[in-house]
Amino acid sequence: MAEPDTGANAARTAHSYKQLKEDFVSNLSGGSVIEVAQVCAVAPVVTLLWSVLQSRQSFFKPYTPLAFVIDYLLNVGALLLSVTLYSSSPILLNILLLTAAAFVYAVPPSSSSSKKKLARPSNAKSSTTTNPQGLSVLSTKPFLTNYRGNMLVVTCICILAVDFRLFPRRFAKVETWGTSLMDMGVGSFVYSAGIVASRPLLKERAEGKTTPLGTRLIRSFRHSLPLLALGVVRLLSVKGLDYAEHVTEYGVHWNFFFTLGFLPPFVALFQSALAVVPSYAGLAVLLSVGYQTVLETTGLKGWILVGVRDSLLSMNREGICSFWGYLAIFLAGQDMGMVVLPRSLGSSSKASGKVLLTKMGSWAAVWMGMYFLATDYKYGAGLSVSRRLANLPYMLWVVAFNQGLLFAFAVVDVVVFPQFYSAGDARAEKEAYETATSRVLKAYNRNGLAVFLLGNLLTGLVNMTVPTLHAGGLATMGILVAYMGAVTGVAVGLDAWDVTIKL
Image (cartoon, rainbow, N blue to C red; front, side, top):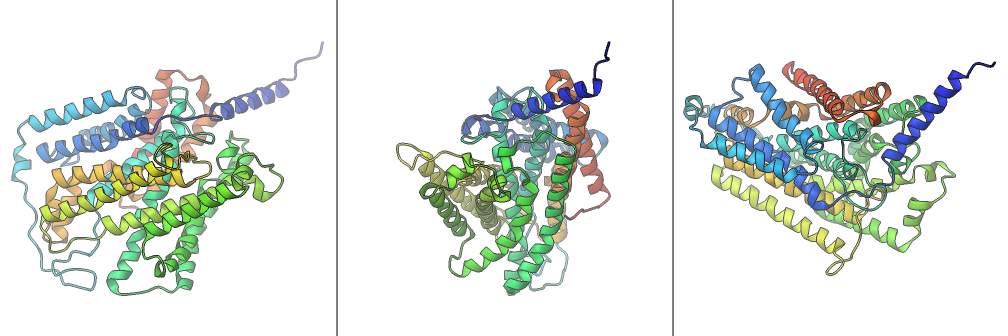
């Protein structure tokens, strides 16, 4: 009697499980924009609770092991709960967090908190980019660190959590039309990158310099090479390990690292267009409207969605075509960076914060209005959001959403920590920044891309060693807590050792 071919059976089992995993993330329709907003609102609400703890009780100074645990539970644990156990009741989670913040605020402040004063101004020498107190024309504001840190935390959570059944399918990436939490995640990653990319441009303006196009392109390619290399490594890893993949997300060979890698040179080219359209927001809208027009007036949309994959171009059509939408999102992020990064030198704390909030709130309202006009069936164009196409409605949704979220973080910052905006010198400002910023979020923000890469590597490791689709709720939470603990531990460790990994 012939023995069963165990090798063939194992191969068939592995193939069927791979197909099951691919089906698990395919043909999804997403959820509502409002629900995504409710889930993401947990981030600024947690920041409010953290800020009240710090401003009223100096809870995170000194930064003891207990302070780290609470920092982790608030800024990582709460976000993990929002996409798992509280995914069906994010409003309840927000109410619980707000109640905790109100309770902490009601408790009399600690003596160390009430006696804390800003450092006295020092006599720093002035330069072309600083004022007499040694303050640069640009500042690293706490709310920017909190915003980018939270975005990276949620991203790292979702890239692994999506492979478990505890993670709602409506939060996973939509197949073609619709909105979801992870659709917002990839766009937010690009938008936040655009914000920080405006810093060197602002420095050039402050110094009265203009970089020639050729030099900009050379620098941009230098920034692109590591990202493109990561894209190649991911491609070879996925194909070589027969890893489950969702082809309609970016294509057969394309991945998110390629999208990130090609952004710098195109941004450098579009910077030359500022002579004609003196606004990154204007460039973003024009590019996205032009792309949407091509989608609607030619066969491009049909080719992207249902075309035959018979060439290298057609095999990767989603990644190549959606690039233009992501480029528009990046440019819109740069425009907001031009608003939030410069310092209001010579202004009082109250005036500086009020002006900043007014600008940010106004821009958020403008982008929300454009999103409404693009998507509303009665008063607008009635277009549907598509992350797969990265079309005009998707670009407007991502930008409007992030503008609103950034505004919420700024409100917490300005109201709870006004001393940052009245700092008299660089030393006082640094002290105020450290006081107003979570060590965990600062660590994520400092080495964002490296932490994101670590999250991708650990996600692959978990998926290769654990049958995630068969994991129960308790096992899922245990794995996710351990995974985020490892990612956070590495991020905080690098920050503690003063290590910055630039990719």
